Length: 160
Image (cartoon, rainbow, N blue to C red; front, side):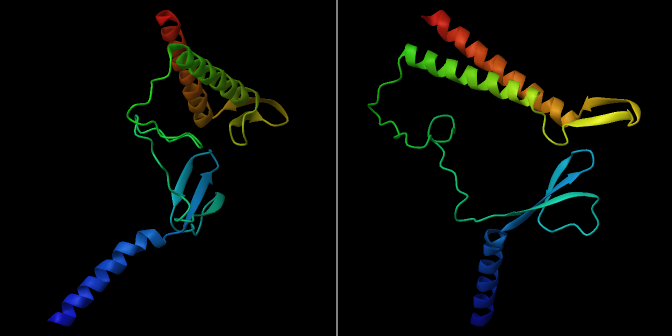
């Protein structure tokens, strides 16, 4: 009976280690621009397949204590007696965030990526560009980020 328990334990340890050993993921992009991921390469797929090799020892995230936000590189973790940023500092950061959000939105509008625009109609005449749903959603998310940043700046400006 002791050998059976040892074998069961060894098998359980092996199965627990399997997810850590998965080091390759495949990104599948179909003709409509829809993206899915797979652990195995597809056999018959009419689209783009991108192999992504993952190093599980390098893909770790350190989350800050506040609101689960990633800790900024080079920024020390505030201690218990650390002073909160001043209203002026918070406003400056909010304005930087707003500028970055506006820039990201404008960049997405000016430089749509490959697969963001589809052509409808006949190529010889009458074809027109139409943004994909994924591109429209990305623009909507960027517009929402700009609106949230604007609201944050206006709220902080009112406090001063």
